[in-house]
Amino acid sequence: MAGLKYWLWLTTRRGMDAASALTVLDYFITPERAYYADEEEYLQLPVSSSVRAGLKDKKLDVTDRILADCQRLSLRVMTFQDGDYPERLRQIADPPIVLYIRGRMFQFDEEAAVAVVGSRKPSEYGMRVATKLGMELACGGALVLSGIAEGLDTCAIKGALKAGGPAVSVLGGGIDVPYPWENRYLYEDVAAAGALISEYPPGTPHYGYHFPRRNRILSGLALGVLAVECKVHSGTMSTVRRALEQDRDVFAVPEAIDAPMSTGTNQLIQQGAKLVTCGEDILEEYRSRFPGRLGPRKAISPRAVQERLEDASQEKREPEQTDKQIQPEPEVQRNRVPLSEQADRFTDDQIVVLRAMGSQSRSADELVELTGIPARRVLTALTMLQVGQAVEERPGKRFFALLELER
Image 1 (cartoon, helix red, strand yellow):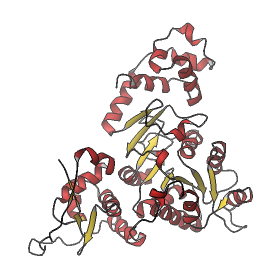
Image 2: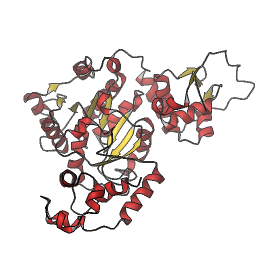
Image 3: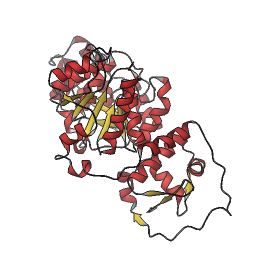
Image 4: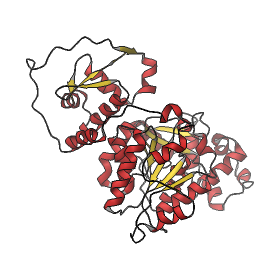
């Protein structure tokens, strides 16, 4: 933690961007050495005068606030020197020096990650296709990445979650500042099932100029970028350009030539992007590289998952069963998961839900009451636990843990 404060000091200097921070690190090797350097040494740096002026400011009050916020919000701070920093991201021209992460820790270099991007004001066709492709990619074992803005970003993320898969959203502001506000519940769902990632510290507003910078991280973490619906001049095309600069694959969904939102995606197909009509069109490109992740897998019916999520959002409640109505649990031999393996296999929500189940079958409502976790997150955890064959659904919409967690 002592060394971390210097990373935060460096990245919060006035005028500092990722490229300038890399230049500072190339010269000083560590942020701590840069902090304790003399002003004369800063003159040797090939950076702007505003960056040099920022480096002269040694106050750590902002750093202390960020560290306190990260602890309060249970955020992990990943630095450029960390061993699990994604190599894919490290190799881009201007990688982020610091990442703030809420949720699961993914080994991105081992994931068949696909970024799904598109218009913020899509057509009904675009919304339907983005949701469908998000679901199909997640069902096939890919990790769906996107922003979490209104429009097609939201559709792709919801599709992945409905399929029972994780999803990762890269943000243009602080993780604790939902944008748009209407997506605040989706933020919770993504954090529970996957991860929220930002290079901006907690409390940072989502300024417009942040999104082009965000796009380089989105494409940098992915193997390829899928454009669902967009115009030629748009934020989606900005992400695609970043992907091409980073030597990533580009996929695009076709649309009618006279459709208002067809110009960007149809142009991409003309220029060599792979035409996509279903998730398998993308999965087949990566199956040989990730046979374990993209091989056949048992998936829950997307329709069933969608019904559960809709039930939760409408706060529908079934009459509680009395003790007389609950049938004795059949004898089941449950495997025991060592404490040391639990964090790698399950999210925090999943662990809490499994412990709440114990050796009895429970309804989703009972688990919400026992855990204190919002219904949406409980259902997301149940869905993912079923996909991983850690939980089974029994008659009466009750759920039973097939695993026992060591305490």
